[in-house]
Structure formats: structure tokens, C-alpha cells
Image 1 (cartoon, rainbow, N blue to C red):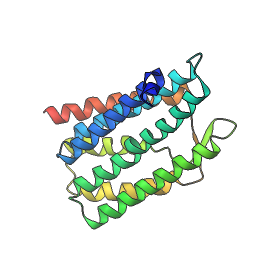
Image 2: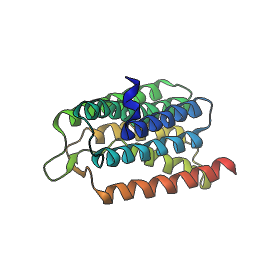
Image 3: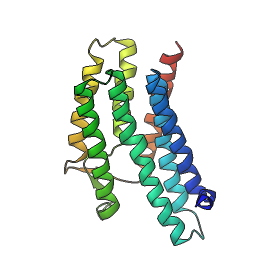
Length: 202
């Protein structure tokens, strides 16, 4: 099994999973801004592994199948499990945060399962809000809190988690692929990382 990590795309997926695990560790020890940064870098690794896989010549069908499953599991960790643990940890594992975390994980797992089965529409659009947008929302809330302290940040995180869970499973159309989307993800991830690291090191 280890030999599949020598595939370039799968290796990048593994790096993203390491970032996601580090992100979870950071929030569990109270380093929330740093944790979100690592999750954003996991998002960038997710974008990169898809491009590498698409442009890899001579990649076997079996390697591609393993890579697809590996990528889906990594997506679940950084885009669903991490946000759930962030909300739980920041709110000191309250009941409301627990319920919000359940919604994030369930909606994330169902969304990933749906798209692994049906894929995108013929025009490259998907349905509902992609999971990675959770990271942008939480990054914005934490960055905003540094400049305009929000006394109810924990409550906002819980409310955002419930709302995002609904949006993930909604039926509106959303771009699912393309260079414009990748550039947007890259820009938001870099801006968010700089803002959060500036806050964390201040």
C-alpha cells in the first residue's frame, strides 16, 4: 500500500492530510488561528493534487482509484472534521457546539459521498456550497475578531456551523472546478493565512 504514496498526486494528498492533522492538534491546544492556517494549507494541497493527477501521464487506473478514495478521506478531515473540532474546542465542548459539530460532519460526509457517486453537472457546476468555504468563513470571523472583538464569537461559530451545514446540502448551483475557482481559493487562503498569522504573532 505504501507504494501508492510514491505517486506525485497521492504524495501531495498525504502532505495535505498532515497539514489537516496538525490543524486539529493546534485547535485542541488553543492555537485557533494557527490551526485554521494549517487547514487552509491543506485546502491548497487538495487543489494541487487534483491538478497534478490530471496532468500525470502514465498514471495507472488502480493508482487513480486509490488516489480518488485517499483524496476524499483527506477532504473529510480538513473540510468537515477540522471545522467541527474547531467549533467544539472554541466553545469548550458545549452541547450546542456538539450538535453543530455533528451537523458539519454529517453534511460533509453526505456531500462528499454524493459527489463521489454522481460527480459534477455536465457544465462543471456542483450543487450546494463546497465544504472548503467553511474555512474561509471561520478564517474571516477569527481575523475580524482581532480588529473588532466579538464578545459572542463562540455563538457566531455555532450559528455559522448550522447555516453552513444547510448550505452544503442545498440545491443551488456553484462552480465546481476551473482555474478561476482555484485562483480564488489560492487568493483567499493566502490572504487568510497572512491575516491569521499576523494576529497570532502579534
